[in-house]
Image (cartoon, rainbow, N blue to C red):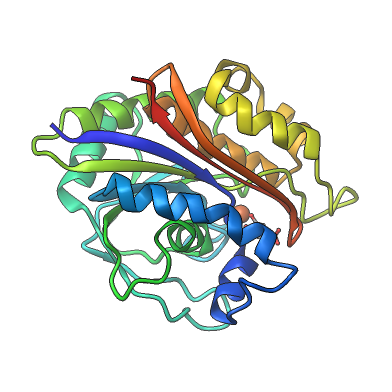
Length: 280
Ligand code: DHB
Ligand code: FE
């Protein structure tokens, strides 16, 4: 059967993509951020995943506010980078892991999740940036992908508990899929940030640092929080962190925190990452 080889969590700020496009990774502003991912790239190279399942949110690029699915799954052969207003970025398209994606969709429906199923759709920075941070800028991506969209854009967003349940279905789907694919799960978004309203610019460093430990060793705490708790603790856009719960629930109850990194601010965001492996 297919195997989950680890979980990655990371922020997905669009200006990270711009910094990569402009060759700014070694500048004093950006180096403290990008250097945190050296270990991520090394881990991925050693772990040799065949498939990356990327849990992220669209930002009004592939879905607009007139129709927002709570959960969507891609079953396409190929995903192009979305045009976010300044033209699609010059990175390779992503090849879909279609058979596993359909298997996942089938199990989700069986378990009463009823996702929107996408045969043709582009992926925005929420997907692109995490892929670049861990896989660099290859000519073609070394993994096939399954995008999972979670609505964190427009209330009502799903509950942390529901995201957790989705992670369990994801784990069961992978572990019941014939073959020997090595699968990495990537939860994206966060950490604390708020881009709007009177609290625009809000960053909660203390809560972010606690999150990077807690998502590994005490995820129960974050599963039990309400959506409003997330907004209060992490900011309105920091509530993107509920997507890391999908990744965490797909792993075993006990995990090893292989690596973590934090740098704030990156753009308006407390930027963090973790590498998790199931404990032996
Ligand atoms: C920023 C962060 C995000 O998560 C996002 O989707 C857009 C912008 C930012 O900090 O600039
Ligand atoms: Fe975002």
